[in-house]
Image (tube, rainbow, N blue to C red; front, side, top):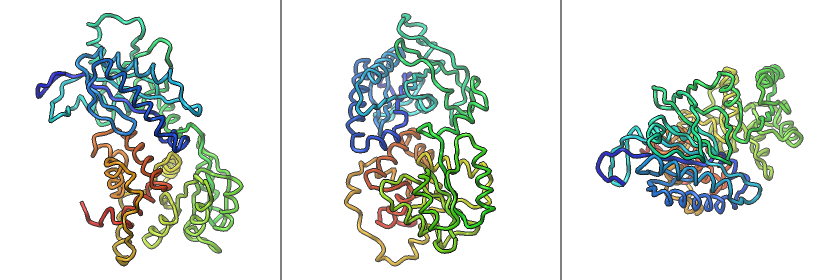
Length: 428
């Protein structure tokens, strides 16, 4: 490997598609599966003389002296994953992005736009797919032709954080999957607006979202139902007029997401949320609905298990996007809401601060770092930028944190971080 301060290097990024869903499915068996994934990938990198620069969660960052070495490694890795006998009907698929460019060597790490471009090319792909930049493809022309793979022009693509389009090529390997959905890019010459809308309307598991609406006003319920049932991937499976009805209706309809009004007669939304989420094995997410400033309710609602808040007069597109985000494992916890949690914490007496839970010791150093950033209200994209990793890697870390700490979602992680003293209000 060229160790000069600046060099032309071929960078390869890989990460596992659907790792959060895989974690939910395998639970304790997840570590063994990912351990095998790491063995197979590292064997492929080593065989092609790759230099592993970072391994974070289910992602790898590897440097190669020549483009052909990176391509050989990618092909070997995809073959190994496809041919491995995975347990529990698991189909583990990784996406791989490759780009060749100039980067500076700082310590033992390369930095520069070429690194970020390679990472964004990887992010644009799907599990089982190998993507190459135009630069890498052109350099491969000088190499001897390989009959075991083909290159297909996917057209110019606008990658996240880059203004100028980049032409992307798909490397198709003989005997492996050849057809994939449109790339996950900002603008694609080969992707129609309808294609992009359909892609965004699909949850990580590929299923529709089952929604239950809880509000004491029939007109409000009817309005939300009309908006949601216009979406091809959403189904309203139940309604309730108060908290008591909500718990009973949940038993019947088993929704993915519940839209829960805060203020209702008989039983309010916070108590209903507490009872609903106390049910064994429930994976339902609750989004609180309110028509007013909710400072006095934020903390109690989050403690009860709510995954976020929406105003009743929210624009339809934001309502739909919020429900999809919660259903896919994210949370509607904007920095403004996080600040309210902190302010409420500050108002509470010091006796409410608990010692650090012993199970925090199960977190890796990187997972602890991610937890602190989550607690400060950063989004996955912001955390990815801060840590120089992909958003997929951040999602995987968050999933690991929630599993190890036995938390429902990231808003519970925020509450735990502040109540335990892991994060102090005002701390930078």
